[in-house]
Length: 532
Image: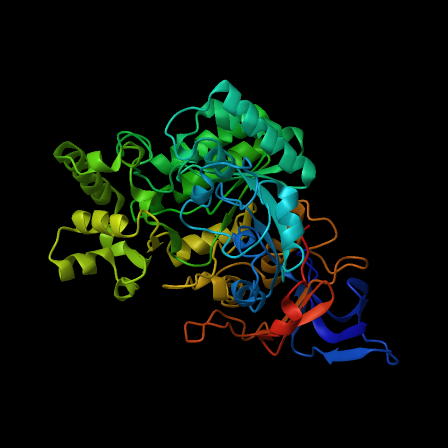
């Protein structure tokens, strides 16, 4: 099959000035990139791209779609992403991967941290190879996989709040080494989530050294993303906790030499926003000193997390019967009240996305709103919601950024773009799954981000380079024909139902057209992608 995309604005992923030209696709590869007039006697399908931009397929630097790739029908979970122009996703982030745990572990149901499950996917996912063989048959997009450190630790000791023993560390090392040798691109930490939040500094450093020795990348959900955090004791006071968390990982990178990707650099709560410039100064200084360090960001001002993410470790690690003691509730109330006041973030900024069957009426409501309806204190309401969801509820967290911070981070040389979104079977959906990348492009058009060529570079070539995705991310001869055609004058996220974005005209994955006129062809999607 040969296809000519002619007379478009070629934005090739390098950041260099665009030009009018054409792209020839042959099979799964880009055969030619032509500057100027297209060939007059082309033998194959011709697609007129006049007035449109032809770019490499967008690469999502932080995703969790590995949890859905091997399901019997993965299409609904991937369709919104391909319709916003994404052709490749980096998966296995925040310590969560669906693979890489001890076979026969009694803690299998805890893998995924309450946020993710493999659903009806079939196979033995205790190894990377087992998951890869199942996922590659169905995945609609290309996936670059990381081994979740939290997944390994969960398989070994569940959510136990203790250091791993020497024998357990050896088992951890074996699984991590095995995944990297079998093809995982690196590993990830989720230091705000169970069980990675309980890992010692020595555990984290030894894991980072293994990743560095294999030439992999380490992505990190930091221990704190706000100036005051229950990840530290006391949860307030002293140096802003998000800065301490960033410094912790920079120090780790310095000691180990690991390539470090700081996931979703966000600033939760208005009081945290004043730390933006110092965070970037820390990153700049580390990079100048030789640390291989970068970060990624959303285009949205909110994000999704598990409902327990704001609870302190000492509370989560208590037996359930002791959490309701007067002492525990008084301590928790004091910490939460002061943290909220210091942070500029409260229960009015937490929206329920899902609690469970029978509680659908709570979806879309803020915790403060539910407290008023139930005539209960906000903290008691929150704890009740945690219990009703069996600690597996989902929430949307607001005040992550404001638009000026997004613009500032977009322009930083070390930033990449991502969605950190997934499609849920029930409850409130995350709008980032439908329009995060079109919003970045719209910000460029409005003059609030970067020139369009540089924005495209960050979501294509720069991300491919960062994660060592060979043969992708650029419009170059011989590269994979992952291509997104969009209208630079209209591209934008949509706030209307359905949430399908505007301006994404065509998307090709490995040479196969799976989006035309902005709508995905579901029959063409399954198996279009590959496990990289």
